[in-house]
Image (cartoon, rainbow over all chains, first blue to last red; front, side):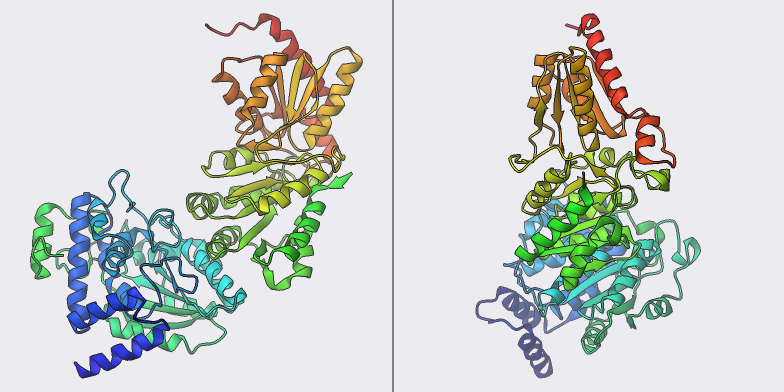
Length: 308
Length: 317
């Protein structure tokens, strides 16, 4: 516990804001202290919420939301300088969920951090709801750009990074892509741009869960060797266990020492992670859990049906 | 004669000097689009994205999220066609303040042939919510358009050409988004035109006047949001309309005018001048205008035709 408090102090010292006024710090502190930086427990809670809101909505992308939980924890709880109550804070770190169908996971994290009311989660995908099926920047605090049409988010992130360089601002830009998504040609256009313009304030991650809609990525359109490709495009590349929050955070820390090149962290993940009957299953890409499946899943996660 | 793209290049430099948030992106065509002038003046704010139009559009959207005002240029066919989904998702749906300024619209692109002509760009952009579409009639109007859109909030598509246009306006003209300009009044028919076809329409009106036919000429430089009142006024006062555009008759100015007329209480005979659902070919600009029936004589013939149809016109009651 002492070691955890020390690490938290380090972390908050890096945030660069007055923690009496900054609500994001207080929220994080509360979560960190309540949970003792128990990433495993926080991950289970978030997974439970993801499954609940998908089951309630009756549609949505289960597998690819469950696979990115630890990545989002590492970013939003462990790395990014941001203010949930001031989502347009000019010096904020930016995050682009390029694989926009992972929206349920992002929505749960943003709600828990206080970007919007938790009650919005239950209205996911309802007509006139704030939370759309894919991220919509015009009405959802914390969403920088609308994504969902794959392949565009890295370019958008590049634009943000270019603006940061022009304005000499210290903010960092993070983008999370899917592995199937890198089949889109625009991703490689963006990869060239980031290297060409020396965007060392840009950190991209890939949710490498090896599955896409029609089957395994290796069978539909092989994207390997992924690490070699990004390195060949001029990126500093890392490969990590995408379900180890500390490992992801450490790599992001290391990437900050890289000058003149963007960084790519390839996160090896499991689609549907956390629920045994959903893990590594292609069929849970774009399907929400049924009521019965929800109950089984929550039991596996050691969560009650109504716990928030 | 003034090249609308030449004016664009000059005005960008002027704007860049006044507003440090203006940035410019191009896709390896900056010599042709004339964004090279901005590139020379403000190299730190110019981003050549290479031959990668989709990346260019979404990158511009990212810059816009951070308060920049990106002007994005390449040939019309690539800006609106190749990168249509990026314009839709990253710019229009995300409501980003991106200014898409194309050059080389229409068939007057000429010798490069159909792969480089753009006869569908207005149709493509018109279907997008949140998009404003402007096609200036000459260099004077182009300067005002570029200055205006720099401070207009929201996505904009400005359509410029390769060739030089006759000068129609002087410094007394004031462009406003959404407001057409009546260049000539008349009571027998109206020619509503955009771009190079405005000066063609004026010449046609002069020829018709010699035959005692008084024709109104309207420059409908903002195609979206279209000046509905001007269209309805033309229908009420003159009873017949010819639209004239360097674009397909499907989905462009002619279609936009037809939509207004047909839903109004003043439908009237209409003839659309434009490319007839076909691709262009290599040739000199003026030759192509004649070949594809976008010449002055085609406008004259079409006007006489709609006037003739007035007597037989009986809208259903």
